[in-house]
Length: 294
Image (tube, rainbow, N blue to C red; front, side, top):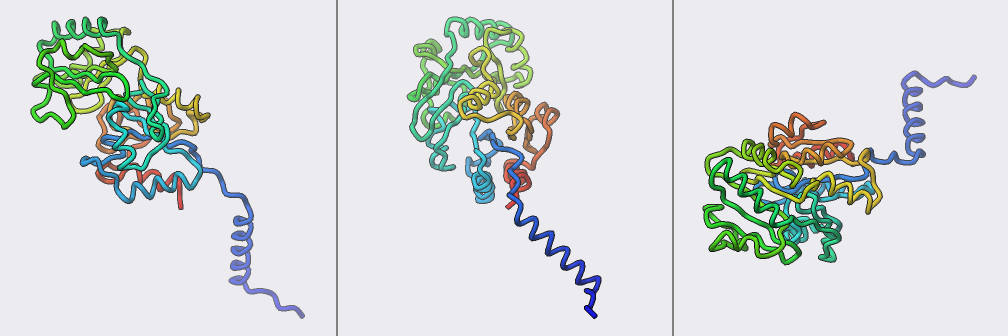
């Protein structure tokens, strides 16, 4: 008479059979094919470093066959070294709040949008009429673009900034964006006034502390990401996006899944599908480890 397997042996055999069947099945594709991340306040720590944990999480993304796409408010001229040296990133980047598609490895702008200088100068004057004196900065166009600032724009100008002797020097070259600072008015209120004054003539966004920006009309991180999607052939539904400031609202709204950092602006926190730990706590990595398990 043939001996019958015990209940424990049956359970073991069933588990082994299930494991064998699972191993025989093709691996399920990752839910997302594109990971779109902001840089400052999101992927980068406060000191602009990238942690080992974050690097490992981005490696998981690549190993799964997905694409990491940088979407930053920084102009292309101001982020090439950062991308190459900190991230070893050589692909396409969406820069300038969506105004530029930049091939980092080739150091080549594929698309770029600029402001109409007479229009934006007149709008700045109208904002000054409403709120009083402003400190200004502009980003001039192209890969040799400069960050030009009025003398009191910042108490500690960064290396590479050009401090102008007269405000007229801000406008001598084509301009991609204008930055507004007010010494007493809060950023949210300044942005609201700028939106009211500018209407549809230019785009207004708030990208960081003391960083209210005027951009070409219709430009946003969403339009930049959509342009990248057309070029590279991916969809919103298969995109997960990470950000921390109101300028990332269009980005998170466009993506199939929008993640706000724990350190994010309150308005972005309200609109996000998910809230990650802060950038100092490797929040991007924490989410990617779940979405792209090893």
